[in-house]
Image 1 (spheres, rainbow, N blue to C red):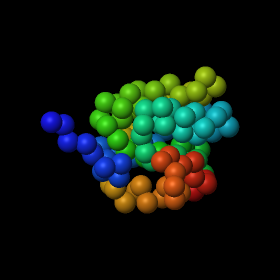
Image 2: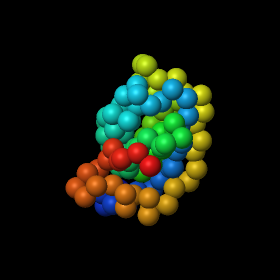
Image 3: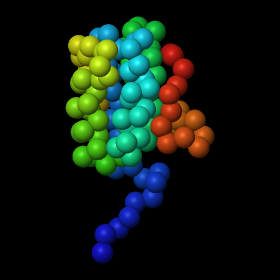
Length: 107
């Protein structure tokens, strides 16, 4: 018998910074759609330094697929660097109430 996990019980959390031509090209909207398609929770936002920051939480296979997709991004983007680190559950507190994945304001 397989044990099902609660929707708030995320086995893997990754905190990501993406650099390159990633602002003004639809990267945040693309990230939201791609994450939701993979049933991931988390958030994405622009940073004032020109990077995009994101947190992804969910199944490890889906996380790896999302990180691979983020290396390419949407058609108009150019990703020069993607830095990834293990994230903490407290990062998910930034999601808007009732949203599985949030597009947050620039920080």
